[in-house]
Image (cartoon, rainbow, N blue to C red; front, side):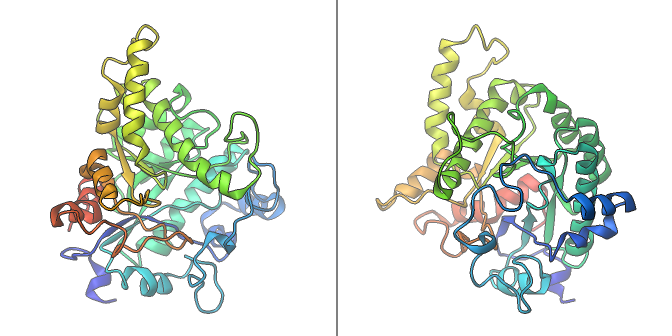
Length: 364
């Protein structure tokens, strides 16, 4: 292994806060599952809260939602081949660290909660063995079964302190809004472990994202991710999570960021008008939004007017923005071009690496 692969210290490249690792098949989890759960997986498969049994909720316009060039030699699924990941992304872009965001299997949406807890342990062990050990540049997210708080706490406590894990993963499309008290024990465990909560657009809650039913098109579903992220932020603030744990940080991943300034103003007005109902909220929601939430750049809003993107990033707060590529998905962002050129060098470095290093405790 080369020096670049054995250590990231001193590297000058970006920190990528959204890389999706893939599996050749769910059989990769077998070594990390008890025999009964291997049999269960082979016999019954996974059982998600969704309307379609054998596909994603909406068929994607790109196979496996991936870049057309992201398929490794030999035909393995995108993101499943470490050597190819190194060649195409880590080495090619001089990535100092990459934060893994496992999306499959859908642990958080699994109906059988005992099986979900077993899957969570398996996915986390799989991250350690397949990714962290051979490639120290890769870090990961502790996957939990959020609807089994005791199991989720046990999972966080099991992996807390492991150098490979830098956050806890939760979905915005959850069975209930994440601010509800059923999820508070998970926030307590994450806070005690000193780990941020990474909320990546994902999850199959069994509920339509709209107020009136299921959208017709993938384009509608794709854009609904932004609404799900906004709803999650509102829930965490208004339900009192960010009041109870003011030092806990939430990373809103792949949900945009330009909306946050308008939302902050709207929430502040709501807070003033409904203060009697929100007596537990002693500070303006905008304060909570600025203090507790970070945003990733992909998919970033791209206004047509020159300079407007830079204005927007500064308005949101440079210190709260983290670079993300979304590798290997079709809307991948290249770090060489994703950040506006009219930002100062200090601002660019903050977004590309320094903010993430500070948040996740990574050595540069």
